[in-house]
Image 1 (cartoon, rainbow, N blue to C red):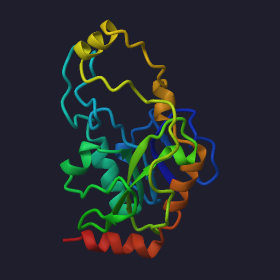
Image 2: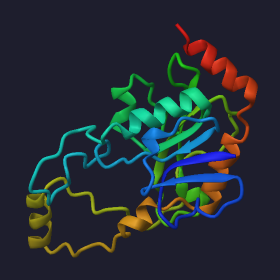
Image 3: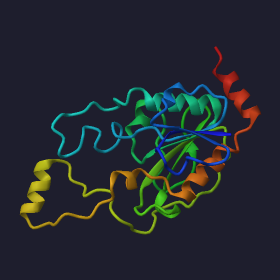
Length: 216
């Protein structure tokens, strides 16, 4: 059994044999084991637009996610598995983890047995390139499809402020068709299966080693 944390209601992780989905209707911060995990903690307060985006009327606080990322990180470190977040997530630096190279390949992330890499979900069926950082503990470290994925649909237009957007429109730049929030957040089936496969390489022995290492 694999626990899938912070996943969409009626998403790609629901109704799967051997998967316990913790959707929004459950509080994944309360997960207490004993299964290895695949974690997709909310990224809004950790990404490029952590402040709320160009049209935000109220500036948000970086990292203010109610403790979701910290809980997901603790679950991966205790029970083994993999955590997924957007490339350049500020959560890595906040939690003292090394940033992986954009070119790909696994690198040591921390002193808690973690490894990290950058991989683009466009290689696995996402309509955009969607560069992603992974963090794993206790799993195998397979070769993935590294490097840039074929160019796909844009996730956003790349404006940093409402004024920048207005200036672009005044200069004649037309709106770019963008993916919906659900499309951006969705995990392609091939990538979901990759993450579940990683989590399933965690063994009971690795669980015990992780828990022993964390004891004072």
